[in-house]
Length: 436
Ligand code: UDX
Image 1 (cartoon, rainbow, N blue to C red):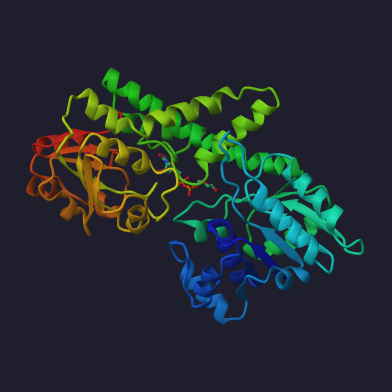
Image 2: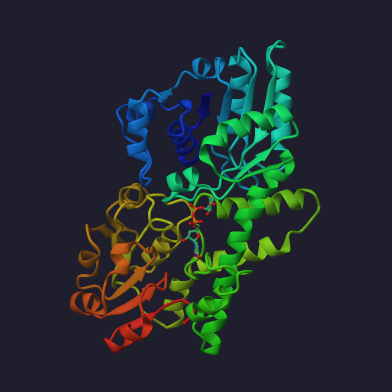
């Protein structure tokens, strides 16, 4: 099938590449000329395991191309996927102007019947708005339909998550749109859930917000475990045998970040509030997360640790391992707090470092300073304290003796519970984890 994809961020580019991998003829559209040139030369603009190889393979096979010329891409497409961003507005609601902008471009370009597929995460009712706009603006002879097809990929495993998705949700009331969608996804061999459009839009928020709730619940419990002398990791393990609870997303830590959970929780809460309904569970998840993201810093304060003039190793800047993305990363909240206290930070992240430097340039920052190094062990050298924010394998593999041998005074704040408290303590390290 001939498919165009609008937007080459995580959702658009991964979707386009995977659709090409499954045999469709795909054109990815973006407004950014430099990005298009980069992709044409075989480079991925985002760090995503396995993506670049798949882009090169499908580009070489003639199934995947890139362009800024949206009219050419949309005019004769069988289906056009919208995968542009829906960032958070100051009031927490989703900003739809990119989605609506693409819808307008589609309306002015299409010359044959086509299906518009909304992949971006959008508030309930947006697909109706997109369809209304398209029908108002499109050339009368063309029949255009809209289906919702929310995306569930996680960064770092996006290609795998798309090719072997747990499910493909199709939201449409039209039999024709459903059969086009089924034909597109047939080569993926994944379960297809066909529902109405508003339910599909809701499934996306419901899934993300449920996972965010699960994490906030574990973080809330972790804080209680510290007060009652329980180990939250052991508690999570004990819970996980119950299939109704499941094994995944029970890891406590420094809260959830990234491009979805923080934005989607606030968007659903805001949407509910607009309808006069208070979504109390989701509000609680947001509140817990805000506290949890700076939990290590508050622990250091509660312990009366003097931070001024201290050399502090910062391990991990990305919002999670496997990505260079800094959106809503706990590091962005903690680094300014530590700098304000006059700390001298030595930071390292295997992938997200360059992105972080753009926000916090090397050198003096107010009364503190930040420097960047090229390995975890270099960051730890002569450090008074260490804060671990991201669970990169390089940090997980550090042993107690790595901390003892390199740090001036081994005090380790483990925001991901990746080390064994007993082993660390037995080695003479002051170890502070989450919930144990
Ligand atoms: C998430 C969803 O998983 C995905 O389905 C959706 O399409 C987009 O949002 P992503 O943001 O890439 O994906 O990452 P994910 O692995 O879900 O982690 C989100 C955040 O939660 C990270 O900050 C991660 O560190 C944190 N997390 C995750 C925990 O703190 N504990 C856990 O047990 C799992």
